[in-house]
Amino acid sequence: AASAAAAGLRMLDGVRMLGPSLAKLCDMPVGDGGEEPQSLASILCIAIHRTTVKNTARTLENLAKAINEDPVKGSAQRVKDARVALLTIDVVRAIKLISPFDSAYKSVSKRRQLPWDPNMGEEAGELDSFIRFLVMRLVNSLKGKALNYTKHSADIGYARSSMFMMNNSFYLRDELGPKADVLQDDFRIESSWFVDKVNKLFESEKGKYLGQWEALNTHLTSVEHDELEYQKNDTILSLDSGRLIKSRFSGFNEDFERIFEEHKDLCVVDPRLRDLLQKEVASVFLPNYRKFYDKYSKIRFSKKHQNEYTKYNPYKIEELLNRLFVDAE
Image (cartoon, rainbow, N blue to C red; front, side, top):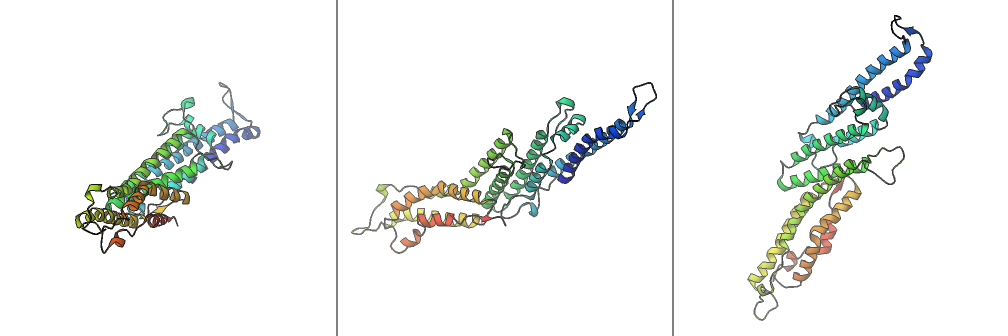
C-alpha cells in the first residue's frame, strides 16, 4: 500500500510536467468552431491528469485503510517481549516514501474529497494533514495492540503493554521527530502536534511502567525507635522486634526477585532507551533502599539468617538493574 501510494504521487508529478511537452508535440486544434478550440494535447493531458488523480486518491485511501484494518488481535500482534510492531515500521517507511510529493498530493486533495479531508479547492489540506491522519491511525492501532497484553499474565501483562507503547513511541520519535544532526534528505515532522503527541504518549506509558517498581517502596518504611527492643544482656533484637525488620527485608527481596525475573527479558528497541529506563527504574526505589539498608543491616535482627535477609546490598541491586532488558534481535 505504501509503495503504491508513493508510485501514484510520483506518476502524478510526472503528469503535471508532461503537459508542456505534449503541447509542443500536439498543437492540432479540436472543436466545432462554436467554442474556442482545444488542442489535442490539452484534451489528452486533462484526461490523463483526471485518471491519475483518481487512481492516486484510491492508493492514498488504501494506505490509510491498511493501517486502520491491521489486525489488533492474535498472538502475532502480541510478541512476548513487547518489541516494535511491524505496523509501526511500515508506517514510518510509508511516510518517508510519500513525503517528497507535496505538490502531487495537493493536486489530489484540491480535486477530490478524501475521508480525512472533505475540503476541496484552495481549502483542501496539505500533505502534512494526511501524514497526521496516518500517525493518529497508527497510534490508535498500537493502543489496541497494547490493550491485548493486559488480558494475560497479570502485572507482567501491564508491564509489557507499557513497554510496547514506549518502544513504539520512542521509535516513532527517533525516526520521524525533529533532530539536530539529521541528513538533508531525511524527512522529519517538525510540527508541534507530532512532538507533543508522541512525547505525551511516551511519558504516560513510562509513568505506568515505573509504577510497577514503586511497589518496592512499600517495604522500606521505618521502624520506630521505641519498637526496637533488645534481648536481655545481648546485642540482638528481641523476637518481636526482629520480625518487624525481617518482614521488611523479606518482603522487599521477594517482590524484587519477582519483578526483576518478569521484566529482565523485556525487549527495548534502542540502547539509549535501555540506559534511560534502567536509570529511571533505579531512581524509583534505590535511594530509599540504600538508606533503609544502611540503617537496618547494621542491626542484629536475626540470630541465624541475617545474611539471607540482607543478601541484596545496594551495589548488588544496581548491578542487577544494569542487566535489565534485552536488545531487539
